[in-house]
Length: 397
Image 1 (cartoon, rainbow, N blue to C red):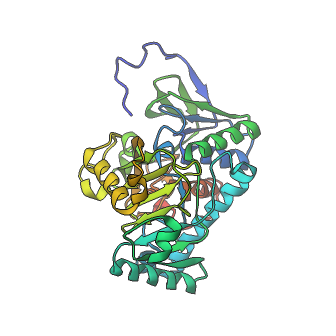
Image 2: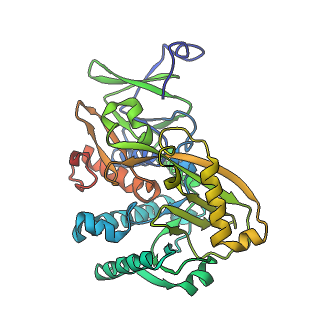
């Protein structure tokens, strides 16, 4: 998010400033969800959604499409960190995220969006990891969270994988085409709330105070509004230093094979949630993760792929899903995306301490699809004076 002195004013509408009630910066799942809930709260609001490139070009259009419950940690680790009541609150929050998506956005469009609610799996490659997963399920059983234990044979027969001694299944998780979901949110905004406008290819390079208003400076037109909402996630610190120690840009890499006949029951996690894979409804197998191999490299805002991680993804397919390699299944796509990891693994909403007219939402820590729609609703609740969960509020920092 930087625009040179020379770029600003060359071939753009420098003299134009467009007035709005609210400007939302960022058109990923967080930004579009925020615009949706704002307009549903007050349809009279005139809202601009401003995006650097195209809608979904950031992490939302680059992730694996998992809509999973909880957070980046296994549930038992959530319990260890927060205690059972708070861990359950965090889990139920993500369950509500999926229910809200189904009610408000997905409803009758599940096939068009590639939506499947077939649960997700956490797989163990060692007895020690399986022991922790089983302990997790016991805690979940006690708290009435739907889960199922898997044997080594279950993993082989239901998921087509080798080299795992067992695991657990979270019964209510889902998956989707993330970019189609985003386009569906945008379409519903356009259909239901005609006062929302979308501006693609408007890179924001600054927010200025101007006589009680906030001016959002972009490479295209400028925008003026009494309130600005930053839905910039991994890129937040580039606009305001407040986020430098709170949301960290972290890259994830993925590859995708050519389609094969269906064999996998649902999306899977392995290696304590560091690696993940799924078979799409159209047959392709997608796998991502392994950033632990290059922790010092997988930070920052570059979205390139690296040989070390891409080779590790291929090796995983060779070792654990041999049917793909035996059939010489072609790898058809490789990509990466930059996510915003929060300092404590939970998302955050609030307003800048130095300027309450600038609100924000972000820090989804690789669980944007599983958290952002509900988190955006919570942000809107806070803006309209309603109480919000403490684990979402940025006041915890």
